[in-house]
Image (cartoon, rainbow, N blue to C red; front, side, top):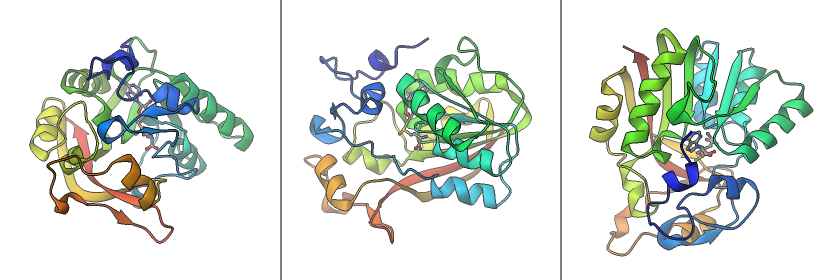
Length: 251
Ligand SMILES: C[S@@+](CC[C@H](N)C(=O)[O-])C[C@H]1O[C@@H](n2cnc3c(N)ncnc32)[C@H](O)[C@@H]1O
């Protein structure tokens, strides 16, 4: 299994770039531009991601569903609540522990497991999935990890399975360090071998951050233009970030 911590240690420093396990343990970690520190979990909504709700309402989710990098489990719990059979995994044990506790409290049948997206087989992820949901995990992987992940999904998916990805747009690189490029061409190339892209649209991913918290966490890095302030805010004061919404079918 890939060591999530060293895999993301792009800076070669003492602390990993994105230490998800520490974040889920509630510790303050370096995140965002210039290694600013935070104890916030920017994607924590305590509710499903609105784009996932939209996909489900549009009939674009068919079980059995695999959620990759499920974080605090709210998407998986929502999808199970809509009657889908759901397996959800994350590499951070504390995320899975917290998700399982929510499932028990809600009486939800979601199977939560600790697994590494870059080695699904060794992680014991079962097979036969007809829909895969990846909400903000793909962009956490570097180019080699993306290749291993996207090829590995083939082994656990049913023929013709559908993959829904929500992924940072490249412009966010002016605010946040990323392990690999998230421009349209790089993402199309990453998917090309195993997946046929049916949709690639610019959308907004809802975070749990206020505008003030976002500005503290991720001010435009020096040299970036004023126009790099791409952030919108929803009616609840939550920051919306520019994301790709990609839907692909197993080739
Ligand atoms: C930005 S968070 C998104 C969480 C959740 N999907 C959401 O949208 O709220 C990315 C998640 O991917 C997980 N992750 C990153 N690399 C991973 C890997 N190689 N295998 C499994 N999970 C991974 C992290 O632990 C983290 O929970």
